[in-house]
Length: 392
Image 1: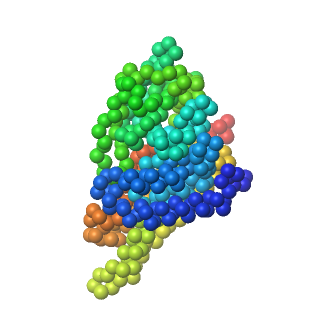
Image 2: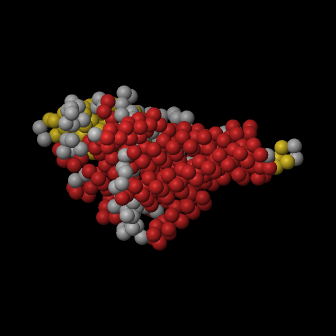
Image 3: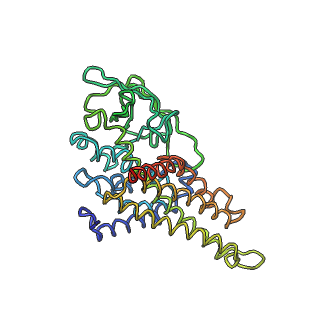
């Protein structure tokens, strides 16, 4: 039974949500074209986001964050999804896949060293898991960490690492032992970005999400102390990766719903004002059918995200539902964005029209933090295994 977040009561959270909604609509949306053209988030928007606590909204209050739980997180994500997704990406790893590794698996000393600075925005953390041969499945990891006296030496290469060019801290996943039936042999390390042997590549040129910076990162003989090993234990890494990714998938699903709502609203605004042959296109039944499909997707996605977040917080389901939600919502927003372009006709294909940007931005949502294909394997495989257990 969920009785609310004792650290952030509903009235306080309502105020937080309103502030974020106002920030998105009045400060970020008017500058979406600037973000797209410059491929960067303006510094004043970054400062404002930090002042609002957005770099640490999901970090516990004892470490300087706002302390939102996942039920509240998804409501915030739906607001943030309404504008350029690169805004959320700027502080997403601090709160999500990187920050949650520390929150859930770090030692008290590690939390004290890094979390307050992450919550304030002083430190930007990057989640360094993906490799050229190991993306959605961390079991294929090739980056290694070997003991060297009281230290560890890390060698390997990562790719598509969000915020790598701006990172102060890399949360690095590396193989410390061969995989076995007992352990996957993966550990996770906290590596300062200025450590000797780290090389960050040039910013990637991407299809969309301008303003979000990703890059390759290589680790060559990078030496870190024993205190860099998350949790102080070598077998934490795989569990940390899976747990953080599962939680992050719920967040991405909610982000997708927010973007789908924006695409629907843009479609409605256009359909209600544009004309063809002297008639409002919103009066055409086929246009109404497209809008109906958009609305149906948004409503279904929002309900699924809220139910999934609740199941996570109560501990009822932290594996199957997150993957199902990410699968449905990221596929749904792709269809809604496609319909939005169709409603706009030729103008929807023009670069400075919002739905054109949305169409490109949302394509990534079906790829990162586990592709749609991986989500299908998690959901289908998990259900079959459960059925076998139930029947045995």
